[in-house]
Image (cartoon, rainbow, N blue to C red; front, side, top):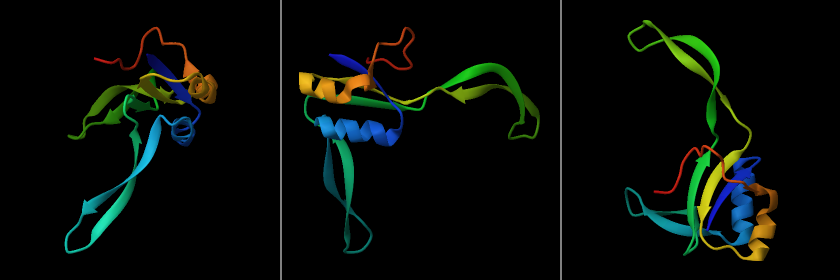
Length: 118
């Protein structure tokens, strides 16, 4: 099943995904120069879950801006504005409890999605 998610912030999205058990924190070791091995914590979808983090979506405002290009000539570009929220697509099964935890973060599929599964 596919779910379209919209959180208020990036932190809110990750917190909810970890709380639902869709994503887990995993420590991995990274070799570095010399004998020292560094450890980092990453966020990883659990088996059976696929996560496509889109983040902030930008849309044209309808206005045009003039900017300088790399070769110092004027160039017209569309003005962009962020739409509310931090977005992700989730593919995988969710329990009723997980759906309840995500709550209003699960939105109706957009008529014109920013990204889709291949």
